[in-house]
Amino acid sequence: MTFGGHTRGILGGLLALHAVAGPLPLHDATASEAQISEYHLKSIFLYNFGRFTDWPAEARGAKEDPFIIGVVRKDIMEDGLHAIAGKKVKGRPVHVVECAAVEDMRKCHIVFLNGGDDLWVKRVLQSLSGTPVLTVGQRTGFCRWGGVINFRVEDENLRISINPRAASGAGLRISAELLQLAKIVDVTGK
Image (tube, rainbow, N blue to C red; front, side, top):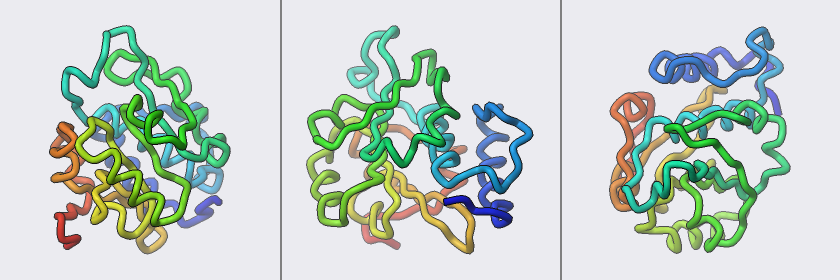
């Protein structure tokens, strides 16, 4: 899925994150807006979520350990994953892995729940509750269910929502710069 000519808002949000984060890992800086897919943008956001989140010391591992981003459906992410290939988060090489089992997700820094139905996503979030994993989703109730960051499309623009309480419960600290770009969702979903 591409957003065609309607990417101005998406890119506006991305450029705002770019202004905070510095250069984004786009390999083809001359790519037209129509060529940037939804999952390409989401891959770049996942990378930047890692840059603007702090994990507790026990979750970081050794300095030479990779920064692991888990995705449930890697097949639908392929066109976007090249955008973060070879990049580093806090000095660690980014590795993207496909994982469907909660045990595998617990080994990740970020997990993008881009597959499964609502009931499965709720169960995964419940199982990961209190673990130092930055959960990212793309379902309407994701943050209300205990997810940390949710992608949403609003007026054909890609936006994010953040549940700071879920982040805190996972031992994660999200930067003020990233929080400023998001709609904040409290535990009641307001």
